[in-house]
Image (cartoon, rainbow, N blue to C red; front, side, top):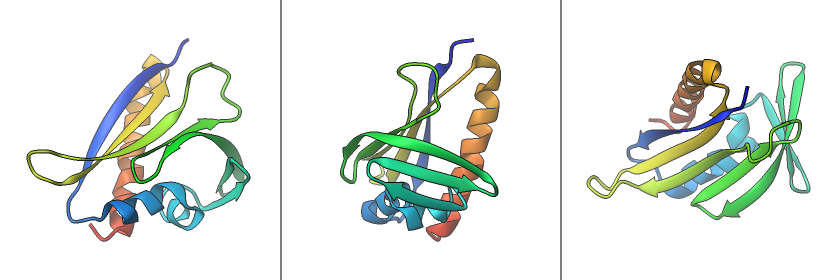
Length: 127
């Protein structure tokens, strides 16, 4: 079954763009909320959870705006996950938009997983 793209947006009140960016792109930042351990080899991030390990290559970066990753074992073309930081015009709050892909019957589980991960991200940022 072909994976479908979806977007989720989270609001981060009272957090600096730089701090959020560091949590989305650096090994210490990502290790605080996304994986147990993260290392970088050239353009490839190595994510570790317990005994599992998964690699993702960086497809594109716009500093302090967006970063797009692709799992190296992904079989489908044009499938990635992306973090995009922007400012909400009406409130001035910082927002994080996550783009990801999932099979239709797994989309709800994927969104729930992101909700849980972003809860941890907010906790590590003191929100």
